[in-house]
Length: 279
Image 1 (cartoon, one colour):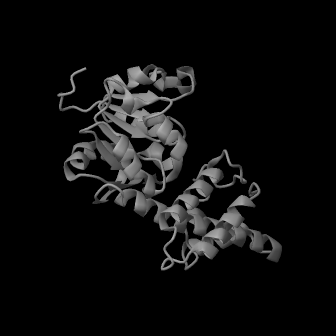
Image 2 (cartoon, helix red, strand yellow):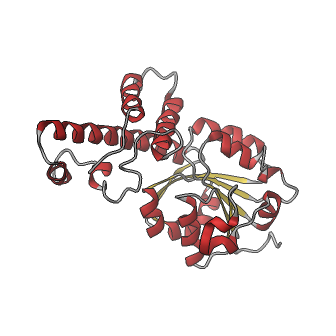
Image 3 (cartoon, rainbow, N blue to C red):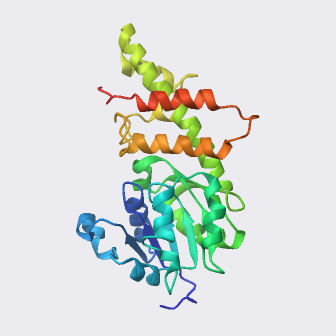
């Protein structure tokens, strides 16, 4: 392929609940976009023709990889170990980490990238519904020129793009934001349980909270969030929320000035005890 072509070819690695609609919005906007996932291409319906099954072929085909895999281990496997996209003979030139991870992992990733490769962190917020709408919020860290080159792609996938500074600032913002979101979600689930026990209709409570001091992203969008009624399972989206709160804790570990351990432990305790929500 022509690596000097100014039109970037984008690969989305991890075409799950978030990655697949992100890739679809890029395709709708006219980008040449390819997908990679460990699952068979046949599982991706209309996008199946854009899936590349072999990691080396995927790495050679794309200029930029947007990584939307689940966690730290999958990120390292994708980039350097099992699938080893950035250890390939013809490796992509840019890595965009859109998974929510501790920002402490980014220097390790940067150190293992090939010489000259750019690293951006661009985690997103909004859940699958906004990924499908192309209205995600992206929190971006990275060099000005690399971010500018990818800004049209971010705009195809998102409604609010925040370039916060150097590599690492996007991930730092995301884990803090997710801690607030997770705390709010845990509080809403406890509030709904209290409403049930005290004889108040849940929908009436939520209506009031949306227009008062109790409003939260989770409570305001309960009917739009695909995973909102899930109980805790390490493999589902509530399990991802647990992982994201732990990423925040890793980011602030050893800093007594932040002092969130007790609050975070309480949030994690609620998250791990969640049963499916019946409404």
